[in-house]
Each structure stands twice: as structure tokens, then as C-alpha cells.
Length: 148
Image (cartoon, rainbow, N blue to C red; front, side, top):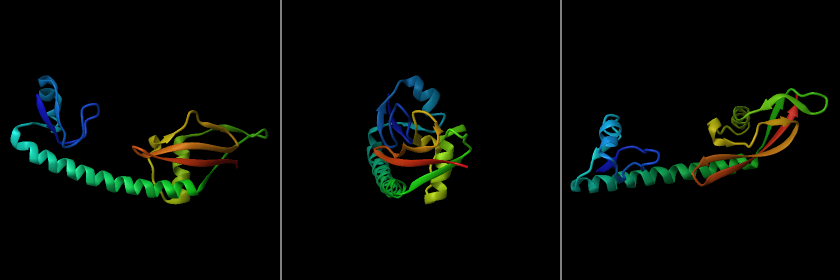
């Protein structure tokens, strides 16, 4: 069944796409949630305008993410945490701590899910983490953990 998506649906398509889905998926999920409409030949122009608006919005968001990446990569982010005499932290520095430090240092607000770390930082020193700002725009953040 051909469906015009009104919003992005993970694993199915993006706003303005005309996709093939099962009738039950359309009837039980897409239609009741207002996410999709049954496509007909007259909707092609509507789909094209939705895709154009989506592309313009994505371009503006990508440009903003590029600007944020430049600001974040220039700054050294400092996080103060309680540590023992040997440099080991009491606890750890998490994604939320790094997001708060970035917000304080650069006025750039991120979601904690944007920060990618293999594991939390547990020692005093310098570490590098990734921040996914937009698909294809990744900032490398230098985090310096200091003892309080």
C-alpha cells in the first residue's frame, strides 16, 4: 500500500516520502497517529513540496550544527570532580556532566544522548569524546577532568 508520510518514521521513511507499507501497519499505526496518508496520484505535488521544505530545514540545521562544531572544538571543556590522592575519581564523569560543562563554557546546548563515550571518565586528566550534532556532523570534544 502506498503511503505519504507526514512525519519522519524510523525504519520507514522521512517526511514527504511515498513508501510501500503493509495495510495493517498503515491502518493500526500510521493512520491513527496522523503520521501517514493513503497516497494517490494527486498527492505527488504535495509530497514534492514536503520534501523541499524538509530539505531546506535540514540545510539550515546542518549549517547551525557546523557552527556549533567549530565553537565546541575550539574550546577545552573543564569538568571538576572529587578525586582521591591517586587521581581516581569518586564516581565518574558522565555524558550529562560533559553537556553541562559545554553549556557553561560555550553556551551551546546539547542533548546528553549526543555525547558518545565508550565508558565514563573515571580518572583525572584529558580525554577526547565525540558529539553527534547532526547526521554527518561530529564534533571532537576535548574534556579536561580536574580534581576539586
